Length: 327
Ligand SMILES: Cc1cc2nc3c(=O)[nH]c(=O)nc-3n(C[C@H](O)[C@H](O)[C@H](O)COP(=O)(O)OP(=O)(O)OC[C@H]3O[C@@H](n4cnc5c(N)ncnc54)[C@H](O)[C@@H]3O)c2cc1C
Image (cartoon, rainbow, N blue to C red; front, side):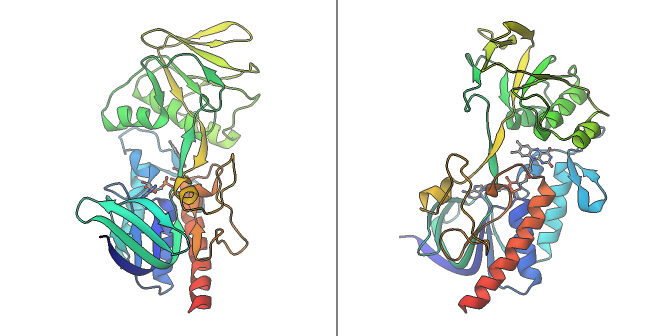
């Protein structure tokens, strides 16, 4: 049988939003908070962006006058703030099930196996993932070698010091795409060609201006209904089907829209908007069951890490209201 432990508040996900919430709860005197993270380290997505001499600082702290950070440094700063609290950190603990009406989550971890946690309030801060152009049906063709998601590219360049392509094409045009173009250029590739089915890049003018010091990618807005990956063994180009034009390359990066990691919410019968997958949030920041909250990128849209950190803090205030009303 599972063991069950009780807390005042349980937070799922130790990215910027979950940590922001944990720190705010501690500062406002809430005792007995558990922060549950499936990875073996805290920090969420920023922790994947390694610090490198001459590297690209892709995390911008607008509250500090727009100072750019390496993701790893940002995650380190979050860790320092968290270490000053008495929040109980559960690393390598993947939440596999939630029971919304019972305010219960079940996790698995290597030391204790299956464990259930119950709490007066639960915050879902599970982040988001990329929905690629192919999921949206815009990118067709086979998937030969050298077609990567942004996360895989990060792992190769920052994690293993490898450069998987020299003449890249990037599909998608938000901040992540421009950050990937800059990273590739710094690692030794040519300026990327960025392709998207919109007239202007999704990345804002100021963000593009920021990345210009490292790379000046060429944006191609394509009106075609779909574009096709070309190449039998390895990717050798992108065919813009309506114009029948081929953009040659030796590697493709797929950057997609971010969609909420709301699988747990769906599994637990919390209300989720479809097809956007955003959890439905009421005016008091609660989800469709009382005592359940969401913070950070799980709420949908693209937000930088700092927005998520402050959103976590804001949601913590709503949690405190809920705790005071229910006690
Ligand atoms: C590929 C990618 C690249 C990005 N690049 C940039 C960039 O260069 N600059 C920038 O400003 N922003 C970037 N962003 C956006 C930025 O990372 C986010 O705004 C921010 O990290 C979101 O914070 P969060 O806490 O909501 O989610 P996340 O940082 O995603 O953290 C969520 C945490 O929840 C954990 N988790 C999820 N499910 C479970 C579960 N079932 N059980 C336990 N733990 C779980 C995850 O392991 C993760 O640690 C990027 C996002 C993505 C997806």
